[in-house]
Picture (cartoon, rainbow over the protein chains, first blue to last red):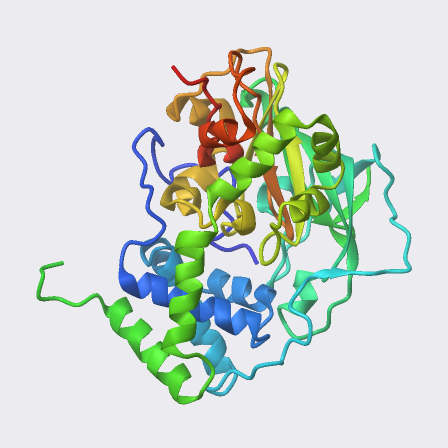
Length: 194
Length: 196
């Protein structure tokens, strides 16, 4: 979904990192939320993809003001509500995400690819800044559970994932910093030959 | 917020824990154990051991760059959020830096939990667009001829930066080298400096 979480390359979302905050937790309740979420994931109550999508669905102002563990709390409350108020251990048989596949990778190392112009209303792990942009396959990462389907209970549908290098100028135009590039790990169905 | 006001999120967290405890899905002890593990046993000291080993053992470094997951498992590191590790090497020509723009993915088994700034919109939005400016704000000014490679962790693969070994550390032991390696250098927002 084209949501507030998709922050890469946006202007106006915070100033200099010369002044920055370090500590992982700001309050004890954040520690508790972290522990609870890890236990729920480890017991296979929810797929991590559903959890990420629950965070993406948080209303934008709240997303930006609740803090990281505030988002985790609101997200897990939502998932529990959607599970009828009671999470069930073992709902996710295998919480790991790497899968064996018989399918050969469609794109070879060094292939020129383009990120497709995809805008589904549901979960997707293709950042907006890369859509429609051309890049080069630099790593074949094996096959992985597809977040787009798994987040919505529509199956694991494993696909090959590729690290794709995008030159700064391709992403940001003439104002890009010289000599910079960005890599993304993209699912096969996000890509087409360029 | 005054000292008499209670953060509403704190109350909601308490209610969540009470509900899940009553349902028998989590217990206070199990939550404590997870927190204890991540606050004390898992952290950048793990990644520092990986880096120091790579600096002193060329065979290990070769394995680490070829298959980060297996090489880290040799030292006993792996698990949640480190299921598949890729190590990217800095050199005089290339500097690598890691981010997750969509959420805040981070290699927990070797770096522990991310610092606040890693999860904030400023870092997530800016480091892909203007990495040199962001790195300069961290105190790392890169020469123009150094290529900056940003790794945006958009799937389940997690990245660790292998920093350059600083000059003047030839006489140090693996343990002494590990003590020099810090979290920011393995995220890629800093270099490892030689001891003064």
